[in-house]
Image 1 (cartoon, rainbow, N blue to C red):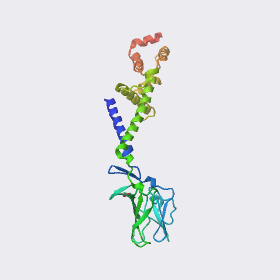
Image 2: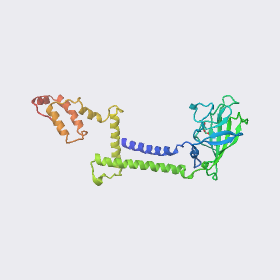
Image 3: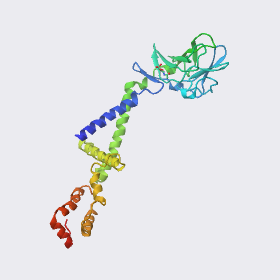
Image 4: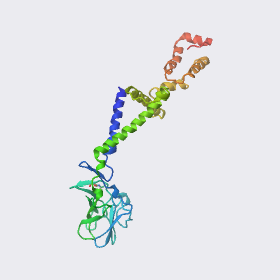
Length: 315
Ligand SMILES: *[C@@H]1O[C@H](CO)[C@@H](O)[C@H](O)[C@H]1NC(C)=O
């Protein structure tokens, strides 16, 4: 049955919505081993700044591009946002493009960044870096990165950098575990649908069933839900019809034929009578199919021609 299939479809949509709302890892977050990690609080309006390699300035941001203007870094804007750079004598050296994918490597959160400035000592190799975030509850503020290693070792030719960053932001945040998050988004989705149902049910009671007073209260029966679904389905279809999405199929075709010039009235009297009988009854839908047949009948029946010539009204 169409309605039953529609119901299943709705249920499946609900579940998919609820799951995808939660299961999709947001940028700079990670679900791992039942824990949830979120490094996005480390995004800073002003770059993290530190002195490395004998007083050279190093600028870094997390999960977003640096705010410091690069100079002669050899990275075009189309490549992405520069994750960090080192001021060198003949131009800045970008250590990679922002990457918001977190990885768990040997018990530590890791961000890897590639495609920085062209490396001096190697052809077709570009600057890259990895930052290892270590959970440290004793670091109350954001903390700072520390340079652990670089390759090659030569300060002016170094191309790959490795940092370590102790911060409490790298610790798992318990309260938003996967299952509880899934539960929360399920409940929220269910509440939204409950609200929609309540509104739709009330409108249906008021405008379709023409009830009033306490009878307007939404009903929570399967029968009522099916009726609502049916009406919504018709509504959507007629809307689609109106905007020409479906090819004029469905019931509205009957209605159109009745109202346009394609319906030729047999006599003025008949026209008047039909219109008169129309007016007290605003719902055309039920009466439409019968009236549609009238002109056909009158043409096929030779006696009726005679009647019309006499000016009598046949209904
Ligand atoms: C981002 O990091 C992930 C995991 O380390 C890596 O697989 C991916 O290639 C990186 N993407 C870019 C564009 O650097």
